[in-house]
Length: 304
Image (cartoon, rainbow, N blue to C red; front, side):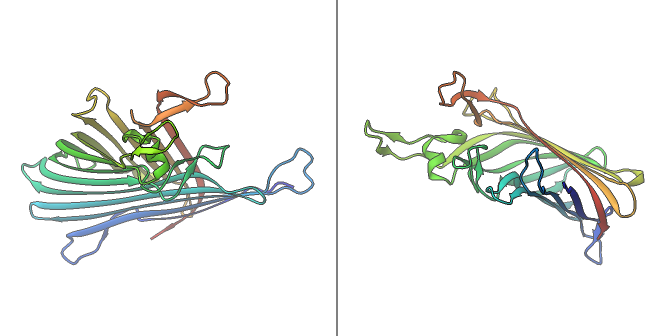
């Protein structure tokens, strides 16, 4: 017998909640929990009992009074496969915080100060090899701070232009840093393999940053938010532009059910893809590649 069960708790505020009497603070958010189960009993074709857990948290807090504004966003994703006899397997992992302070210049332009932090919660492995760590908490971690202008021609669209930006790449894992992963300077070893010059765990890059953010709630329960970010470093191949695109779509099927779709696309010139190109069992560097990840879930929906 095979049982497949999907249960989603999607708590979301379709409209912003007012948190202060003078309406200066507003917030809205989403919590989504997706559970999937597969079990087997005397199944001749074989299979492994498993539980699939996916969680998404999105929260937005905004302040607006006079000519000043402040917006904070938190987005977290974590997914894992739990097997009855095998080790658990992580399927998604992301933690992002961003904050933007604005000071009105004209009707559609704000002077802007922006900062963000991107990382993940736990170690990642190069599956099916679950002993080789390829990422970790704050390995990598990306911290970005910048000054510029924020253009908002319509209520649902924001274009942040930050020509003065500072980016720090953090690799807080000795093994990954020693190998020079994510663009940091790797450790230098002698002929016996002993480290004579330690690796760097930080990579500093002055550069320019562009962020385009769109969010709109349509009629009949459709909500879309999408952001795409571009960064170029002045001191390290400025022609190589890092791209990070995240999209989130929620559609309310009925009063109690909704569908959620997420799409993440990344291009980072320092994230080197490795593959065994000649069959000798050793993975060679083949350069950066476009990274893409998508998820979809349908289930019960509850409003906050």
